[in-house]
Image (cartoon, rainbow over all chains, first blue to last red; front, top):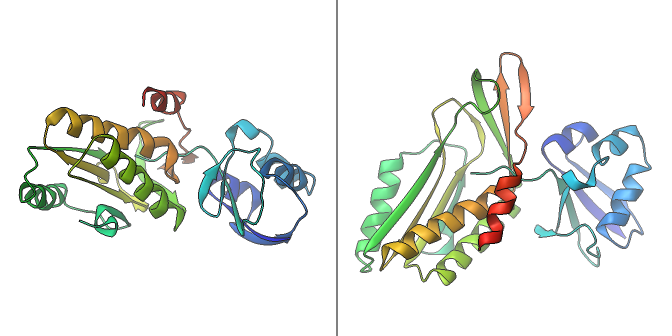
Length: 83
Length: 153
């Protein structure tokens, strides 16, 4: 299925883009991270520590073991630092 | 006050006094007896020579997350209303970054509601701070205490 991926903060900088569309068969957020890690060194570096990764499906925060189901937009980012 | 008026995400600076006065005036008309507000200012976090702070956010998700946090605060603490204003983009030292305000019949609810808003805003709203100094730019790391603070609610 085609998914829109979004990256923010240092994840965006490490990967080198804030947005891309990919075709993927990944079933969960964690599977998708694993798939991205295998792509190249920049992704492997960006996703090297999953404790420092948060994810959102269609703009709702989810756990990394969440199923992707029919989410169009998958976002990855570091822990938030608002306020 | 509707959801759009209760949640503001903007790059422009704002006048804390004017925002609070407008909120308090609207709340007074609704018979609230207590208004509590908190404002965050940019300050040095790491090196002590901050030139600027840059805040990145996730347009769309930010508004959605803030509206959800606000709705929950209103419900849990029986608030007359609550507002959240948060900036993004580049700002200088000492500038206001964000503000929350709550109103309730009683002060305990207003105080607790404001603390709840701040705790959730810190680690559940998609904002990321970057400090710009003479020696470079550094992303501000999330603190474990901020995550732990959520467990009290």
